[in-house]
Image (cartoon, rainbow, N blue to C red; front, top):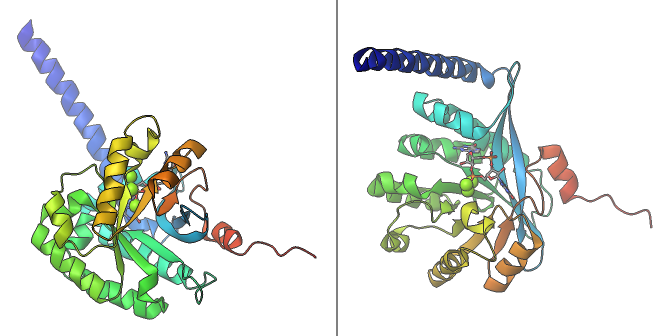
Amino acid sequence: DAKSLGKNTFVAFKREMTVATQRRVAMERDLRKAIDRGELDVYYQPQFDCATGVLVGAEALVRWLHPEKGFIAPADFIPVAEECGLISHIGLWVLGRACRDATRWPGRDTAPLTVAVNVSARQLRDPAFIDRVSEVLQSSGLPPAQLELELTESLLMEDVDTAVAFMHAIRGLGIKLSIDDFGTGYSSLAYLQTFPINKLKIDQSFVRQLPSERFEIANAIISLAHGFGLRVIAEGVESPEQLAWLQHAGCDVVQGYLFARPMDRVALQSLMTPVQSAA
Ligand code: C2E
Ligand code: MG
Ligand code: MG
Ligand code: MG
């Protein structure tokens, strides 16, 4: 009858909850050891000037190679790290690695290459975060103008006052700011005027359907950015047609599988310093 059916459903539900919870607890435990065991790595995805194709920088993306489970995608462990608070520790580690790696990138005198690092909500809420960032810059020796922090729209809208204060402090250090996954959140356009940012990053969901669909949104973001005196970057560029459309629309920077997948720092270095020809 209905009553026993409901009961069985509840039992099954509880069992599933337990499995999910156990998995989460196990992941949290493993994640706590991941840094010490050297299982985390930072990969870099190059970013190019949209018009000229010149390399302008790279985005740092964390990677986790678990000893038993193999590769775990950031989408699977970043949310767990955010929930249990480990993201502050991991995020700081990524930042340190990225800044140290970037000091070894060539061409710093002519056109300095920037390194973009993702920041999560939890980090932003930590009052000590600004000091930590400042310390990382000092100890790595990376010029602040070569660092860019990527914040998501939803993160900024959680607590606008705190976010704005944070952004001013970051800009005060000479660091650049960009809004990641732009167009997917709920930020009011009015806030763009008060946010001290340098760049908007068009979310890949809008880029994916170019040039036949969704071009109105990409177009709108590009004019919006330029109207506010901001630079605009498209992420997730996979086809020559998408690139052609973005070039025509006046997009400033591009990043995506069409040009390069995220790679380790050694691969990035060799991309930056091509082997000289024998001639
Ligand atoms: P995101 O910051 O929006 O990064 C872009 C994601 O798109 C990356 O996935 C990248 O590998 C992927 N991607 C780049 N080009 C293409 C393309 O042409 N096609 C497709 N389909 N995908 C492309 P990834 O590395 O798996 O990272 C996923 C998300 O995890 C990131 O999204 C970011 O939100 C988060 N994340 C990664 N590293 C960190 C970190 O160090 N700290 C924090 N807080 N979050 C991070
Ligand atoms: Mg990003
Ligand atoms: Mg993004
Ligand atoms: Mg994204």
